[in-house]
Length: 380
Length: 188
Image (cartoon, rainbow over all chains, first blue to last red; front, side, top):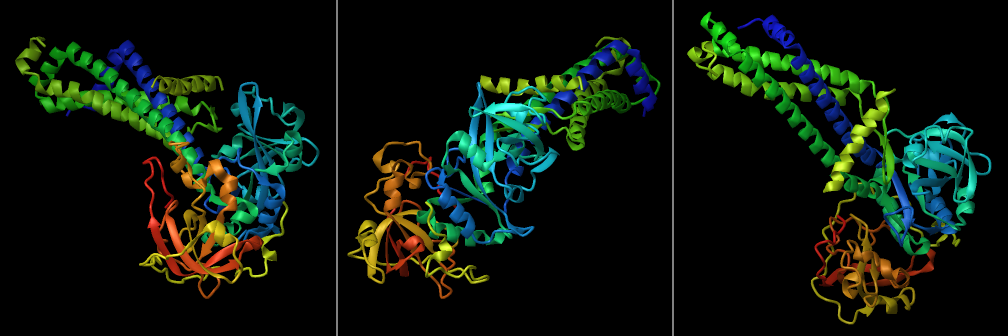
């Protein structure tokens, strides 16, 4: 076998071409990482938002869209008080009466959720990261991705800032995180204030965390028995958000297809480079075989070159993608961060190596099949 | 980080390419409220289907006008059910869902009667086959699905909120299963 240093030296001999191919492979790696990070970030947001132990009582007239669901406030409060199987946390029942409002600012739409303090027991992924919970009139808690969802400039919802929603001015008093969920793109305020601002006398839903998901059947029986009395139906969060996953599935699939197409482009670019390398060094390869190196050794050396180039490009792409930090992305029902975690970036590196193998195989095969006499005569 | 906008631009290219292609009292206040918890570990029964139809079964609206304790056979369409339990709602057959009115051939959940919600709510009756514990018995399957025309015999009783419900005596008979669009996806 030819030593690895031979392959390394060959890369150095074609400096500009090597640099251009390396840059191309680095770009391929970054694009594969971004496409996969987009796909995973979106899919995870749809999947992680739903908790199997959270049930939602929705209006009997609109069972799937919380913004369009309505329940009389009195019915909602009576249902919240009677719902069985609710977890008790810190001495309080984890049940929350909520109003979900699609709030507009120009052509942008955000979700304004009117809540009571128990909402934090039902949605424990929501954690205050800055400021305080709304306690005064028209105070607002902004999710970390709310600005992205509403097309606002970064900092527009900083603690202390004001924003007009539903025709009234709100003061941002806190920021919250809800990693990996659509909640992170929402705006939360006191239920009473949201009802007053929107002139609503009904609410959207009653959300409750069960002490055990096994009690779901009991809740379903309770809800069925009270269906007419309270005009509600019960859904689990996974049922409610299944539609979200379904709606986003084509987009995530498209992003994955894009990643594969980009990867295919990388394979072709590398194969082109390696073919050019074979053609430029036909006589040299013939000489190597004349002094005793077998066709396989020459082919393997070419494959090593391709892999080295791909690994270098992949490492550069891996490093560059690591510099992006948190990249917010918006979609109609929310917003999410690109998943640029180490496993996703490693996948990008793996894609670059795959490009190296696939892009190097054909040129290596050609080198193996090259007749010695023709190679020495540089006739290929 | 200066690279962040670059990443956003690159990712935004993906969708762009895609574009080419009352306040009533709580339920606990009801006098005959059932026990709070279902029986754990009780074995599920097969679907309690009757082999013969129930002649003389009355529509749901007629049954809702009956009296508590009255023995009656009722016929109506299944509006909703609870998976694994012998409990469902029947709606009077005079209330037409959108598959029968032809108003919306794209509807995937015609049993929600979304076009006639008030009418449906007024013509809705809860049916339960209860066990000794006062809860609907566990069943492997109800044997019927939404929109099926079903006849049930049993005793009228007061349910939550004082509305009449039917305590089924033994089971139910499937009279007719309507043809629906392939778009309709029934719950599990």
